[in-house]
Image 1 (spheres, chains in turn purple, blue):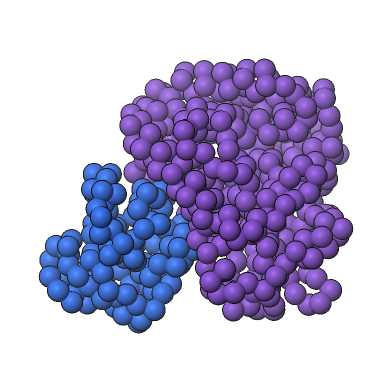
Image 2 (cartoon, chains in turn purple, brown; image 1 turned 90 degrees about the vertical axis):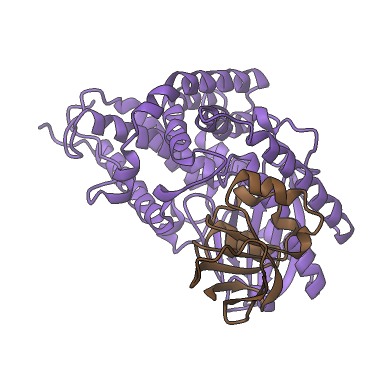
Length: 389
Length: 111
């Protein structure tokens, strides 16, 4: 075999880093066991990864005609941002998991060269993830797991501005805010076809006074790109954010899916300050308590409309909806890059076409990638091997 | 009669109602006394029962745990939440008035 090039070694190091963190996170959540009465979550996920595999390299090339990975990452460093961590994750996961399935189908071992490898696409996907992530995060890491479960993205000036808005919540205010947030979260969950898309968080940020600041966020709430999300009942704001300052004793962990886990779950007794805010292009605005009821009511009405629509879907569309669902992960990068609505429409049509063409085969030939993800003792994602350029 | 992992709340009394199928969720959505209902379900997925979660009194789930999505959402709504519940009876509990105790027990108050 020819000697490994330095660049290939770099790429393989990054592939291993991403794959190992995903293996740990995936198995901790037992994601291969996901079940839902409304959606075929395992099959739509595999279909969605294939869609991303097929469209992401071309989409990245189109996006990088307008901007750089660093500018994208910088543009995501704000409250309520979309794209956020989950979209960065999917840039890599969709491409690499489908590549893995195709390697398994072809009987290629993880140490073997794969003749159908497209090394230029692998490099584009992996290097884009690396460069966007470096610009997105405030520290020198690429993944939350490397950094002890933290995801710092905000500048000190923004943090200081938020801290000024924090107030100790009364028990009643805290309960109302949580309830409103849960209603919006349920709406988002149903809107995104039982994917936690849009639901995440960032931090924790250590404050000088010993407190910890963190943000729980929901974005994409007024989506009208997903065909089923063009409902009569609409959320009022496109994102909703809870900012908490807590005393020691609260453990806040972010993961590579953009999600956040806070323990203990009943951390209310340790909350020292809270603010309900909406992220905006140039900052944020505070949501006053007198708006909580209307926000909750709007989210509940939209959620129920989405639910009643979704139960009419047939078995095929409970998988095929991956077309729009995963186009919706690429579109935020297009928008951030300044691409127009035509680009997003073309993307949607292409993803829907891939989904329609692939769904029958997927229903007949169950994919093996979930078993690989759940059980392989080898690498989750095979490295590039010599033979590739 | 039953015991589970209490992940929120300190106990509550209400009427157990099954929500394992879409038809059962539909029927619940139409009930005027939904606010007296304690949901009884097998799956720890929140989306299946999403329309009724904001209006119920508590939930008893036969699977999942504290980090299940249903438990997380249930906590946010401040519902009494019992997860991974096991019953020592084959009796159909749908419609029974039960008390969820602060130790995670479920006892029939009235059938």
